[in-house]
Image 1 (spheres, one colour):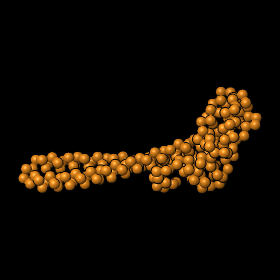
Image 2 (cartoon, one colour):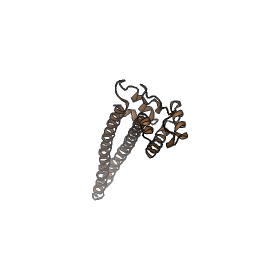
Image 3 (cartoon, one colour):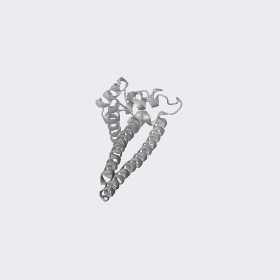
Image 4 (cartoon, one colour):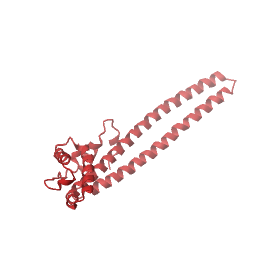
Length: 201
């Protein structure tokens, strides 16, 4: 599982992350299984980040009542009001700086969570597309036009993620030119070799 810092850069790319992760997949492990397990671990990590985000949000909110209490206490104390107001202003300024830092941290954590979710979504699409490529000939052979049509539509949606990759341009052109009645003749699926989902670059 990649470190959370992998998702902390502003130029994070879900496709690049999936490619890098799949490039270290053990050669003997099936692609669908590897992607499925990776998706599950990524979702669990995202849930942990979300829990941390909630805790930090609550901690930041607790700063506000404390600062307000100090102001009200200063207002009720006439003796030494000027000195106490000065102290309170310093406390408020410190609380403001701390709150600003907390908000910035929360925004970064939320950005990391969104990137992890994007990576998980890309993994799901890659898994579904790989499964369809493995089953496409069987689906065509079934003669079920509705099922064939639905499968082609699903593959078109998935391939739209990788339409700029030369390895998949031919597959997309074939899908666009075919309908349910085309059968399986001359339909070729791209090989998903050791590079795994290199088509996601």
